[in-house]
Image (cartoon, rainbow, N blue to C red; front, side, top):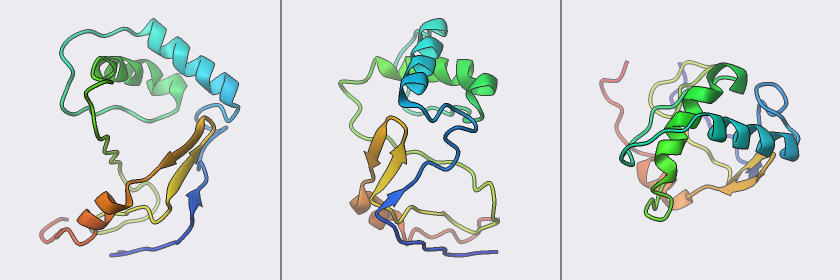
Length: 128
C-alpha cells in the first residue's frame, strides 16, 4: 500500500477525456448544457455535494441535478474542494495533486497550492 506518491508536473492532462465524456470542447459544452437544462433542481444551496462521476451517459442526469442546486450560490461560493476515490492503487491517506493545473477540454483549472500544502501532512492515523 502506498503512503505517498509524487509525480511532479506543471499540468496534469485529462485522464479520460474522450472515454467517459467528449474530448471535443464544443461537444462537451453542449453535452453539459443539455444535461443541466434537462435536469433542473431547486432548493437551498447545499454546503456540500456528493455527485457521481461515472460516464455522462450513466450519471450525467444525477450530477446535473446536484450542480444545478449549487449554481444558485455561484456569487457566494469562494472555494470548491474536489475529493474522490483512488481507482487504481491502494493507498493510505490522500493522493494529492502536485501539478499546478488540471487540463480539461474546456480549459485549464488552477490548483490552490497553498491549500494543498496546508493538508499535505494531515494525519490519517487510524484510517483503514
